[in-house]
Image (tube, rainbow, N blue to C red; front, side, top):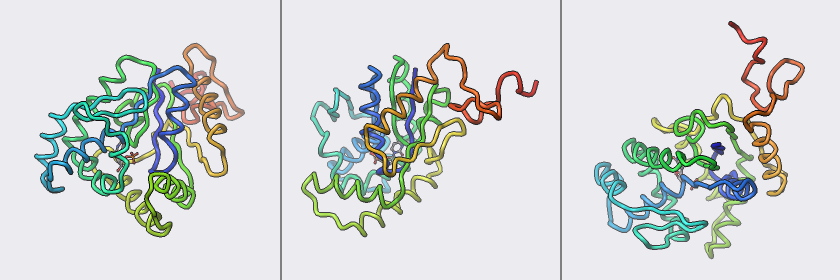
Length: 242
Ligand code: DC
């Protein structure tokens, strides 16, 4: 079973997806980390952002590996390095590059072939795993997301200003939504979960329940309108147009 969790920056996808995967005994894939690894490698080689061919070539040559919570670039643990602000500022050159995306999407699909996985990103339920059994669109208000990002940066020893983080987030949201390939968009069959005011545990429990309703063999849970409440866009079989 594949569970996809898409949503904007700062919605808490990585933490939630990781905990959900642990609870389900599934593997976890952080696809944002893959774009970050490519950006880090390119920055280290001094590649210019507009050197699209250089970025693709590099993305295809590097070896990235995930081991539990750690991410490796050509054997080096870069789990912390890929979260630095200068990587965040340059990651769009990887994310906006159609050929880099094509390569990473292929890697993600290959990883998914082993089954039972929670994967998070922007395009997991739409482009990468359109047939995933359970799709979630995880979001929170802009202010809540920016507050979380400030806390995160402070934990890493940086001294961010809330207004600057909020402004940068707005730019990233626009970029994510308007990217010509793999834009952030809610899949029609994804369930939207807004995390404002919810504890981490609440969110993970809600998603675990949602996954449970999508397990194979479970009868659909129909509401009065005749729709499966876990898949609101899916008409009830006996009312579907023939
Ligand atoms: O979730 P994150 O901040 O670690 O993602 C890093 C960047 O990669 C961000 O700019 C969005 C982009 N991204 C993407 O385009 N597609 C994905 N599946 C995951 C992340």
